[in-house]
Image 1 (spheres, helix red, strand yellow):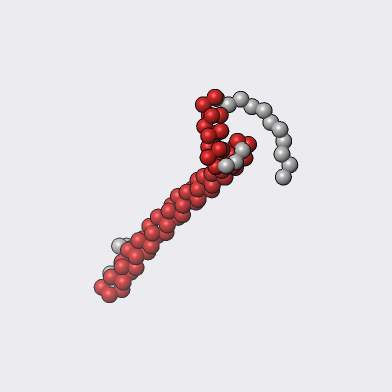
Image 2 (cartoon, rainbow, N blue to C red):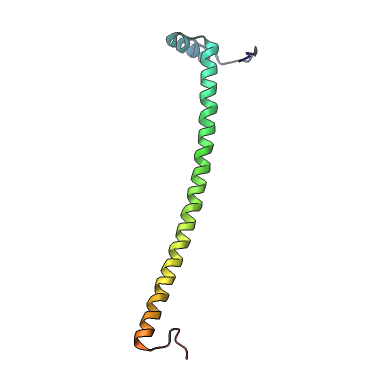
Length: 95
C-alpha cells in the first residue's frame, strides 16, 4: 500500500505516550498511529452497525407488539363467537 507523508501537530504528552507504546510493541510510531487509526475507524463502523441493528430491533419489537395485540383481539373474538354458538346468543349484542 502506498504511504503518503503527512504532517500534523500532537500534544507533547500524547506524542510521548505514542513513542513509549511503539517501543513497547516493537513498532514505529507511524505503524502504531496507523494501527490505532484503523482500529478507531473500524470501531466507528462497528458502532454504526450496532445502531442500525438496534433500530431494526426497535422496529421488530414494535411489530411484535402489534401482532400480539391482534392475536389478543382475535382470541377475545373467538371466545365471544364460541360462547354465542353454544348459548345461541347474538355474537355482537344486537339482533
